[in-house]
Length: 393
Image 1 (cartoon, rainbow, N blue to C red):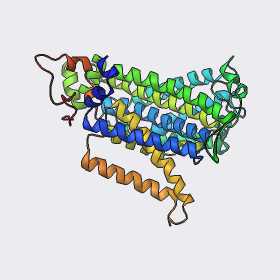
Image 2: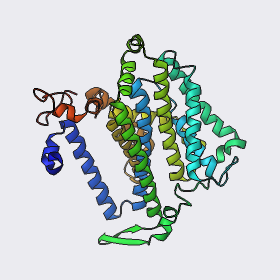
Image 3: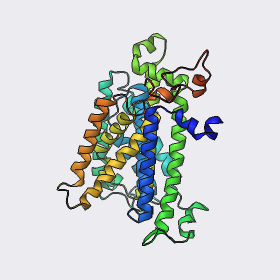
Image 4: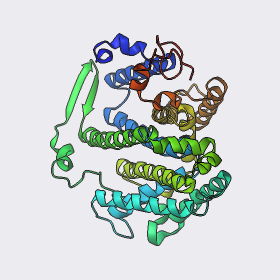
């Protein structure tokens, strides 16, 4: 209760890195609020960007549960993302060549089942072998899934994509009518810069609510699993699989569980994207998506759930922020080269100055109360700092 009642005590309880990250996030939020109030950024577009960032955070959490927890190299993030998006879209889109018109909840279940089946199918022949075999298999899977979605018109509608996807809450008793029932508001806190809250804003607000549910449940589940005996065994497999086998553990079974869990989270992100964007096509399965997610996990810290969240939001900030470079006529390059340059430079800086990531997982692996109540004295370094200084992360 003391930390909650005394903000200064809570701040002192953070490591210097966490204080820096918190301050940086505070400045970003302040800048976004000022952009909204000044009219430089539309309210509905801001919520759309937040949803996109949350989607990448979900993908990063999925990869983190595979690579960060167990050391499984998965280069098919875009494939499982696409399976989730197409699974939901094929069940709900108006131009679906298979079904269409089903409740989005049914599409969610179909997408998760499809991702689980494919994950088991690719894991059975590869997870008993060395890690590089899984890397090769998943790399091939990503391209197979993309080409299937592009060429099998009778199943996926091919390059034309799937349109007419409803929002997730469409048809629900109260939430389905929420965007239409809410009035259009025009708020002018800054003279000459009105903030318009119309149908698109209320619709995106529902998407943000759905995202927060997905993120909250996923983060809480992974946080609990990370500190459980199951999570400790996964970290043992990552560091020394032979040791886990010597202890009598069925490492294949545990690796399969980790791989399927991460794949389901990635598919969940795809389901959210389908109902956020309301359109899905094979271009959404671009391999660059896998690259962005790997960057997010490495940036935040392998094995760190907090780091995966942070990395997902940072990658989207770079990806979407670089689009505004095209509006600046005095810059002689387009946004795409700037985006790749910024991400490449970010990787170099992280590998040089922070190879363990910005928010490494040490503080997530031990319950805070176990450190606070440590006897005979609380440690001055490691998981929790005594005076808020740098921890030995």
